[in-house]
Length: 304
Ligand SMILES: Nc1ncnc2c1ncn2[C@@H]1O[C@H](COP(=O)(O)OP(=O)(O)OP(=O)(O)O)[C@@H](O)[C@H]1O
Image (cartoon, rainbow, N blue to C red; front, side, top):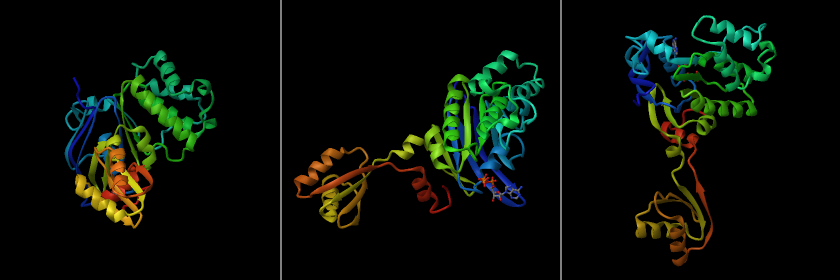
């Protein structure tokens, strides 16, 4: 059965009489990396804290693998692994000792599973070294090993690449993709860094001021066929395109025109313009970035 691993239905949260989360709906499916994107203060951490049971919603329903947090807390929580704040580690112990200590609290975790997870997170070479000698990226991976050692269906990560260098971020991205197919799980990842979400997530929800303002597949959001023409007479070209195909374009200046061509064929459009006396210097296809989208949707809330 294709039951969502996570469902938020009209979830609201009031803190000190202020509505921080204003009725949000989110569904995360099986084997999906889902990005939760928004500027500082939008409500990401508050939402994640509700999902992992650290705080309660004021109203609405949260279900994990079909279990409601309110009515079936223990069963729901068994399906979640998370890193909300920095993972707590014993620095004077090795990575392996940390994992063994953590696993001793759960008799179902075998030594074989510990070895398996160390391999998956790519720490085999350093697992006997003290955690105090680990880089931030290695600590992060050990934290993930700890969070998913008991095979949850959903891993939740709050701004996980904060402080990582570019190569650490790249390795981290690869690890997340690997987890989805090797561990057969889903990942919910919050971030205010657009490029991070863009490259790793299947779908995103954009939150601004406690409201979800857009949920869609990343590829739908990014590839909307924007075109920029640099040509001899933009006004005339714009009129021609409108008369021929009802295609709306925007005249930027005498020589520059932009527009979204949807399903039209760009070569056909260009041939038509040339045939009608327009000289084309160059044509550039432009994919919308999440940043542009975000600015359009929120009219300027800060996000990087
Ligand atoms: N315990 C609290 N008491 C009062 N206000 C709070 C509390 N927790 C959160 N808020 C407010 O709720 C809003 C959302 O905060 P939240 O931490 O969820 O945002 P965020 O999207 O995670 O931002 P950041 O990326 O900065 O962590 C903010 O305006 C914050 O000040």
